[in-house]
Amino acid sequence: MGRMVRTAAGLRKEMVVAIVGVMVVSMVYGLIGLVERLGGVGPGLGGQVIAASEGAVGQSGEETDQAVMTADGLTAAAEEHAVKGPAAEAAADSAGTEVPAAGGPSIPAAPSEQRAKQQPVDNNKRMALTFDDGPDAKYTTQVLDVLKEYNIKATFFVVGQQVERYPEVLRRIRDEGHEIGNHSFGHANLRKLSKKGVEREINRGDEAIQGVLGEKPALFRAPYGITPDTLTDVLKKKGKELVGWTIDTRDWAGTPEDEILGTVVDRVQPGGIVLMHSFGGKNSNLDNTIAALPAVIEAVQELGYSWTTVSGLSGE
Image (cartoon, rainbow, N blue to C red; front, side, top):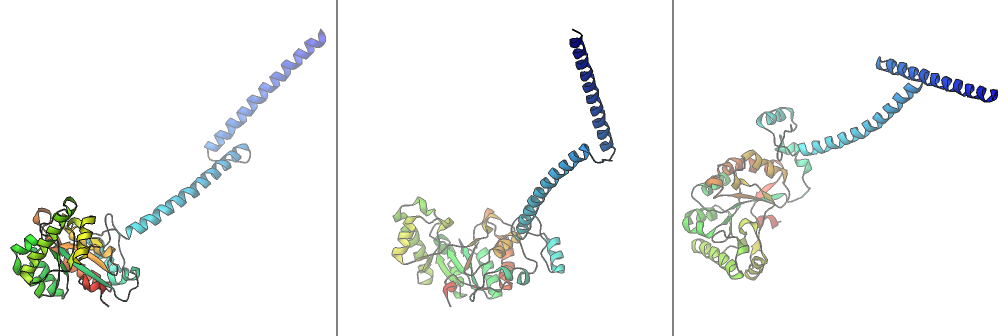
């Protein structure tokens, strides 16, 4: 019985020791935490915890840096295609480098120095200017004036209805050495027409042009760029060449002149075909086209390219 009592007493003593030990450890941890908060961490368990935490942060930081670097690289690439405002352009001109800003394709500060290096090597670096939907007596004549000033030849895809209204402008296009193509008679969506309807649009456009110039054009451009199989069949039968474009300036939508210029410069390539308009446009206004045209001509020339007609692209 006495042994049992002594054993129980021993157990109670051990429990007290254990409780005291726990309290002491808790106090030690509390002191470590206080020291850490005060900024002085010494060796021991607290220091190990901090080191482990820093290791985790460091690893996370490396991953973050990689992500930031990747994003920065993409941003830098994207900024090469950003449109610059007048102030940024002026700064770029004085520094001889591009100064990027937000939004849209880029306009190089010094095209011959900044962009020429990025162009594909080609012995025949030519591009074609094309103008759709004319002729008319307002914008087509202004386009012709600019082309004459720069001694540039272009291709005009004319609409039969407009040809009937402004035959004298069509003659001027021909007389000044430009190329003429058929753009249908009424600018219809050819996908909505039967094969006979498609053929009628082409025939009537040809007849309008032939009635003024005495010959039919060999080139055809589809209204809206819509080219159903029926059109392909008809053109093949007639021996006409279907012409598209590689650069859509969206001048008809009222696109600002600096954006038109940026779009062209950003997509310059040998054999490129630029789509612009000489009639129509949003609210029948193509002032932006006329304003942008001289800059477009000069910028492409500064990149080492020459302007020609669509047919001239295939010449040697």
